[in-house]
Amino acid sequence: MSKKLSNGVFRGRPFGGVGVFIKKSLATCTSLITKTERYIIIKLGPIYIVNVYLPDSSVCGRDDVIADICSQIENCVSIHGNECIVFGGDFNL
Image 1: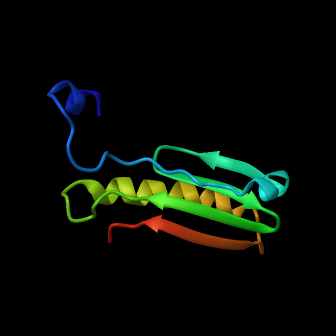
Image 2 (image 1 turned 90 degrees about the horizontal axis):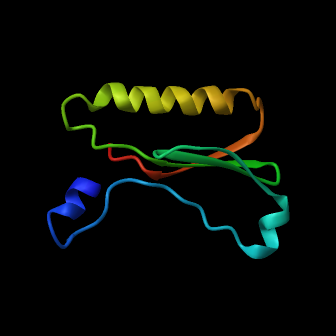
Image 3 (image 1 turned 135 degrees about the horizontal axis):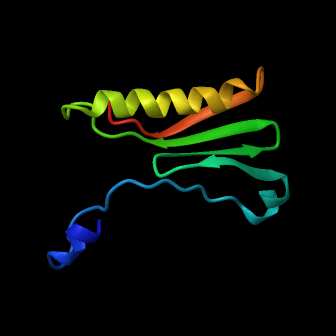
C-alpha cells in the first residue's frame, strides 16, 4: 500500500484488510479469537464468526495463499468442536 500511495493520489478501493463492528451492548459477551491481515475470528456468545478476505483465485500463484489461509482457519476453528461457526466476507472465488 505504501508503494501505491507514494505514486500520487490513490483512486479506487484499498487492498485487503478485515474488521468487525460489534454493537456496544454485545461487547461484554464478545471476545477476539485470532486476527490476521486476511481473516478475523471472534466469539459472540456461543457463536464463532469468521470474516475472511481472500485474494482473487484467478491470479496465478494465489492457490497456495488461499490454501494456507483456509488451513489456518481450519486449525483455529477445529479446536472448538461442535460450536456454531458463521463464515462471511469476500471469498473472491
